[in-house]
Length: 375
Image (cartoon, rainbow, N blue to C red):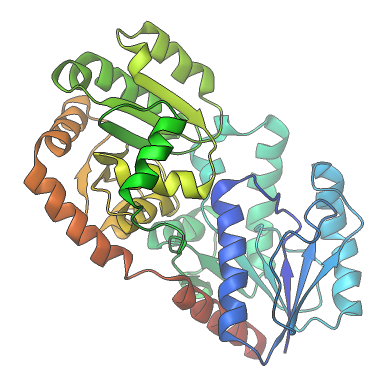
């Protein structure tokens, strides 16, 4: 079987969750499958950025640049069809959610979340109109749709207007690089980012639905008064960056709040390992990979009880409603002040994270691909 992987939407080093998904999935598929042939279609910027070590994996560099998004989408919807036929593709795994309408081979559409239907303000007008119009049409073309969580599966059925039997849930995992760091590594990393003493950690691209401004406000008006630790926020700028910065400037402890931006995985693993706790107050997640990253590093987790997060966290996190300020603040206060609670969550977190692994993700993905070809 010749399996095509449409990775034309992939921008190496960007789109944190999507970037990690592609790298981890391809690495795991190389581990478990030596019999099928894989052809990965990438843009010019992405050429050579995947670690392809298995002989049955190769990439095809397409004549487009990802940064020219309209042209990339146009070529993906047209030129990719001919390229797939030339390569003799039997089935196509469409990682960016878009399925070429004239694709001859059956397609598996991957949907990590349908944020555009919930938080349209995170998207430009053109991209919003394109996605809300195109994703449902692609869902009709696809043989099967893979969702990262049961929550996202429900969104797919509701927003993309497809039957539940056409969908499959294939959950993700944290990378193996996220594990407890040595004390000396933690100390060096803290020094690198000028972090002193204890700290509460939050990781996520700064979009409105991440709810980071409220986290800052609660730290400033309650947590920071009772606790000497700092608040450390890691992640790329997003649609709410100015809102976050304004919240920090209004506060009484701006020097105790550190916004680090994007950092490398080794440093992030050390920060998870050294944190008093990890807080994720997001209003919306299609999966919630950072919860598992924190758990694998032995960091106690307090996170939102909305959307897909309860599926990922299970009973290994302190769940709270991030829309309720009192409940949100109570959860933060509890996790930073109760050492026995943190020890319990740490132990439960290790066990919960072990339930998710990329080998299983790859196995289930391959099973869906085989089913799509035999339908």
